[in-house]
Image (cartoon, rainbow, N blue to C red; front, top):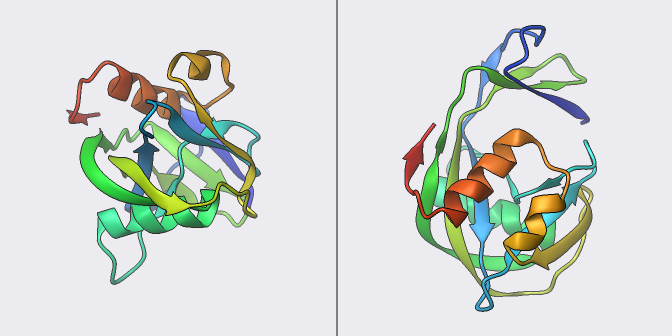
Length: 155
């Protein structure tokens, strides 16, 4: 389901849903961060997605990371909460979702790096290598918050 991100855009459509979601900053023993290049917008992003009924926000981050990247993780902390009402995702089916995301810090515990139907590419990047990657502002914000050790932040 393709989507378009709007952040701080006065011409953005009005939100018609609010869905809890999790993203994960997964950091390996070498200090590299796990990223995926999304199929829906071609931008680099953290693994993550909407929380399902019956799961915790931590379980959501673990599940989404495995589904999207092939990497098994353990949640070890929180980077921040991101609930900007001026940031919405418009989907082709008419849903316009206000962001409500909790970004968790995680450590890899197993698995094998692989693409999914949601990722064109997946890989490990040094924090500095993320500077030149195309990504939406909300993902860049999360990575910058993690790199600055600001957490946990509330945005």
